[in-house]
Length: 332
Image 1 (cartoon, rainbow, N blue to C red):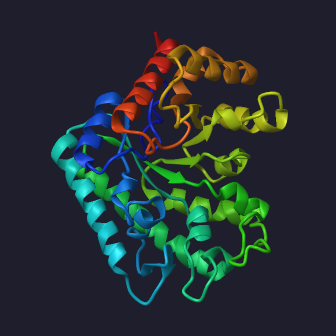
Image 2 (image 1 turned 60 degrees about the vertical axis):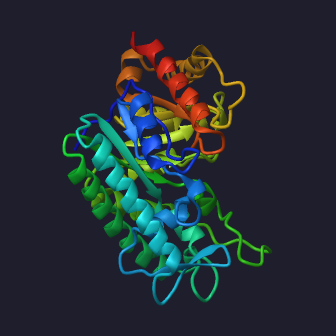
Image 3 (image 1 turned 90 degrees about the vertical axis):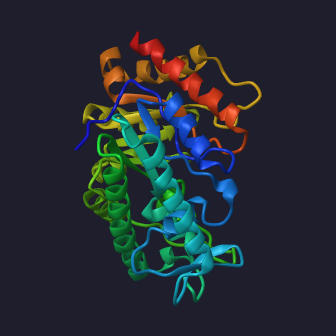
C-alpha cells in the first residue's frame, strides 16, 4: 500500500465550474504532491456527492425522484448522466495526467452518509433498515473497489488514495438523522456496527482510505479502529482546550494515522487568510498534542476545511496556493 504523503498540501474534492479539464489542470498544477480528481457539482444532478456515488453502486439500481436519490427497480436517467460524468472525468485524467507519479485522491460518499441520504422506494432512508444498510455497504464496497482499480490502471505511476466523505457520520452515531416527518429521529447506530461497516470499506478498497468529515465531533477513535490511513477534519470545529477532543487525535497520530488538517475556511473567498495564519492554526494544534515537528512533516497535510465549489476557479486556486505556502513553513 502507498505511504501517506505527509508534509504537503491537498484539497477535499469539489471545485467551481463545469469544465473538468480546466479543473484537473488546476488541481494537478497547484497540488502536485497530493492531487485529487475534482468534483464539479455545478454540472447538475449526478455530479453531486450522493448522485456521483450512486453511479458506482453494483447491482443496486437508483433513480432521482422529486430531488432525492432513491432505490428503484432500474436505474433512472440521472444515474446514466452521473455515469457519463464519471467516465468523462476518468478519460480526462487519462488524457492529461496519466503519467503523474505522485499521490492522487479520489472521493465518494461514505457508507453511513450514503445510508442516511439514499431513500428506499417505500420511503425513509436506507439507514432505517439494517438489512438495507448491509446491502448498500456490500454494493458500495464492490463499486468503490472497481473505481479505485480503474483509476490505478489509468494512472499506473500514481499512488491512489480513496477518500470517504462522511459528513453525516456524527449525526448517525448520535441519533440525529430525522425521519421523513421531521418529528422524530432514527435510533443511533452502535459503534461496533459503524466500525464493522467502515472496516468492510477499508478492507475491500484495494487502496489506502482517507476518512473526511467536515462536521463537529468527528469520531476519530472509531475511524482509527476501522483501519483508515488518514483522517481529514475541520480544525475550526475542534476544542483545543478539551482532552476529550484532542486525546483521540493524539492517539491516532501516535498509531501512525495521517491527519489532513482543514486549516483554511473553504468559503474564505474575498479575504483569504495568510499562509502564516493558516500555519499558525496547525501549529497551535500540534503544540497541544505535543508531537515533534518531524512527525508533523511525516503525517500531516494542510487543506481547506471542505470542498471549494462556492466561489470561482481562480478563488479556489488561491486557497490551494495558500495551503501550499502554509505547509512550506513547516518543511523548509
